[in-house]
Structure formats: structure tokens, C-alpha cells
Length: 586
Image 1 (tube, one colour):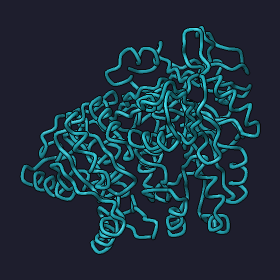
Image 2: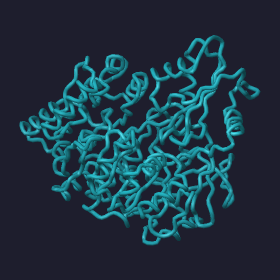
Image 3: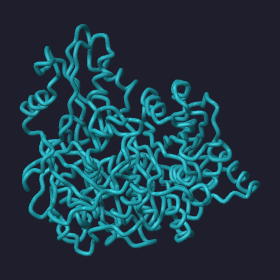
Image 4: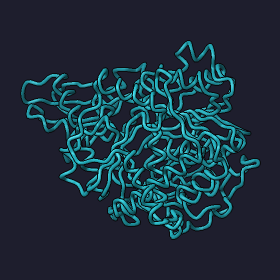
């Protein structure tokens, strides 16, 4: 369904577009598979992806190679596994060469991508796979030990296993695999029926040749309304839901990114550092899709922690773009090897995932001589909603102006527009806004009302149309750009017999933007170590409380609801030197 026309009045930000079009032209491609195929053909000989290990070992694929190998994977899915168009395929991979191959293959097959955090625990995997109805899973070999516990509770019938060194030169691949398996001992045995990715690709190539398959036929019927991905998020509540992103949603956001950043992007000449995980919507749309369209060379870092893992990638390649979160940029600025020798070809950097601190932005520009600009968005908007222009007026502390074809409105508790300069909930309307939540009609209706996406964030707009996030309407916690929902953490801690009551909030943290802090009322012996160990068994590491406080009673409302705002106010009162935590961006 197309969004209603955007009103021409009361859009002061349009005056700051300069050469940026206020509205997007008709889509150049009918679906993402067509975009991928066209870009691969145009930039066939140019490197598309390089995976760079911390020690500098690497492997690369050209645009033509990615195109050919992803074609083979598409055939494997449709012919080898017999998946029907629209079947959900879960992908649980870190940044590695297998990721674009598998994702592009899923889109070419007319299937639906289900991005999954590789660090998820078995219970988190089970919930997401069961909810999405995924029939197939592509997983990195580092985490296959979780599968016996997960698969019986899902619809997954096919498992494909990839390695970090997939597509590396043979000798390098064997060295990396040997180090991971025997020296680091981080590759567990696989105790379920699974197909190695290399074998799956070989089968796809054989089937294509034997049956004379034209892969483009798989995606000819895909249109802008066709579902492309289920991107899981808590949205404005604490229960994970699959945001339904269509081919049109993602194509529109790629075009909007182009419009805002195109002045600093040259076709076939860019080299973008991808330290953010590609399964996260920010890197997925910006690094994977938008830069592939422009024939960029994407340097993938499997794990950016510790920050020294980025050194070889930055020193060995002509990095011209970097995307990241505030904590990543701050960490780089604290590394002597970076500040003494910043990337010489760097053109710009973009921050999302968490609020960009003004001090970090200022120091970045002093050190690199290039702009670091902040964007804002959320999973439900594919994700970009606002962006600080790279040309023209950039306002520190602002999330910028709405991207083309996007209307924003700030409303009060009665859904009435607030006066200019006053704070109100940020609502969004545009072609990048999701179709709804997968099989969650009530949540979809609550979040999408009269065509407007209700973000749950409170913002204010100045006279020029630039927006500033004021606070969050909900209790979402952001740890290094990842969503943590208090309800989920509280439910996990409450499983401990010694826990009487528990309340969880986010508190400012210099390293991760926010940290999870748990307040526990006990009814028996309990210590911090026990709580932390229990949470690590059931939650991804970034959700595990960094701080645990034991108290006699929790503040509550008259109906018995724990007042998290009172817990946070008390914490800030006792820690007055702590800066306010950032608001949700991209």
C-alpha cells in the first residue's frame, strides 16, 4: 500500500535539502534481487567483499563472484530443498563472506530472510525460529552445539553450516579453520544433520546446469509489496516481533540513503568498513544494500571487539567510509595507531544505533578531517528516518532532517500535533515504513495508526526542521546500539528461586552508552555472581545485567507496577556526574 501524499506545508527541513530531491523518483528496480543482479553486472570485476581477520588473513569475492555463487544458493534453496516462494530462511552468521552470498541467494530465490543474532542463546533462537516459521537455517559452525536443543521446537527441516573462512584461498582457509578448531577450540562438533555450505553451492550449480534453470525466473513475480525480510525487534514493547520489511520498503530506504549521502559516494570507487553486524538493520541497509548498489568494496570485520581487531582492516585497505555507533568511534579515537595514522582516503562516517556524543563527533573531525554525522531510525522504518546532511547545515546534537519522501509529526498523548519547539512523540510516514509485525495484528494496529508509525521516542523540532531526541516513551535500554527490553531480563532473573521481586532499568555507561542494571528483592541467599551466571545461560551477553543491586523494596504504583522511572531517578541522584544516556537511533 502506498503512503498518502506528503503535504507541502509545514516541512521546514525541505529548505535545507539543497540538491537533495524532496521526493523520490519511481523505483529503478522492481525488487532487491533485480538491484543485486544489475549492480553485480555493472561492477562485475570489482571486489565486492573482503573478510579481514584480526591478524590480516583475508579472503575476497568480486561482484561477479558474489552474483554467481548467490545464484547457486538460490537454486539450492528452490530445487535442492524444495522451498516455495515466500518460505522463511533464517541466517545466523557474523560478518563474513558467506553472509552476502546467502542473503542475496535467499532474496533471489523469492524466499524471506530472517536475520538472527549469532550470539543468541538456545532459548532466544527457539523463540525467533518458531515465531517466523523458518524452514531452513544457515548458521556459522561456531554455534552449532545449540541446535539439538533448538530444532525440535521449530519448523526448521534443513540446516546449512558455514565457516568464518569460507571462500578464503585454500591454504589460508585451512590455517584459519585449524586455529579456530584445534588451537582456540571454538568450533564444536555438529550433532544434527547438516549440509556444509560448499556442498550446498555445488549441488545448486549442478541442478542449475542439469535443468537449465534461469535464476531470474525465481524473482520475476516479486514486486514492491512482496515480503523480503523479517527483522526482529521489540518495537515499542518488550516482546520480540518480526517487522515485515518489503522489497519496496528496503529499496526506498536505499534510495533515501543515496539522496542524503550521494554527494560523498562515487560509483565503483568507495571502500566501506563494516564493523557493525550485517544482521543489524543499520548495517544491512547502509553497508550491504546501499553500498553494493554503488559497486563499493565492503571490508567485513567478523568481530570488532577488542577494537584492535579493526587495525589490519583500516591499515590494509583504502577505507573511504565507516559506519558505526558512538562507542566504536570513541574507542578508535582512544587508539594511538588510529589517531596517528587515520585513514587517508576517508570521506565520511555515519553514526547510528545509539546517540552520538558531541565530544566524540568534534574530536573525530579534528583527527580525521572528515565529517561524522548522525542518523536516526528504527527497524520498523528499514531503518533510516532522519539524517544530518553531509552538505549544508549540520547541527551537533541533532538527528538531522527527515529523508526524502518522509513525513514526520510530533504528537501529544491525545495524538494531537504539538507546537514547534515543544516535545512530542515522533511519528513517521513514508515508503520505508514496514508493512506490520509478523502475525501480530494487534501490535501492528497499535504501532501503525492511520498510516503513521509511532516510534515511542519523544523529540522536538526547531524552526529549521531539525530534530532532537528528548527521551524515550518506553523503557527500552540500548547497549552498544542493541535493544534490551527490561521485561525480558526481569522474567529471566525471576526464574531464580531466591528472587522475590526484580526491576530492570538502563543507566548511563561510558563504554556502551547504557548498561543494564537490575534491582532485586530477595527471599533467600543470592549474590551477583549467581545472577550473572544464570542470565548468561538464557540471554545474549549484551542483555546480561552489568550492575546488580540488592534492595529491601521496589517503588510501585498504586496497582503494584514497578516504577522504573523512580529507580532511574534515584540512580541519577546518587550518581550526579553521570551523563544522560543516549536515545535510540538507527
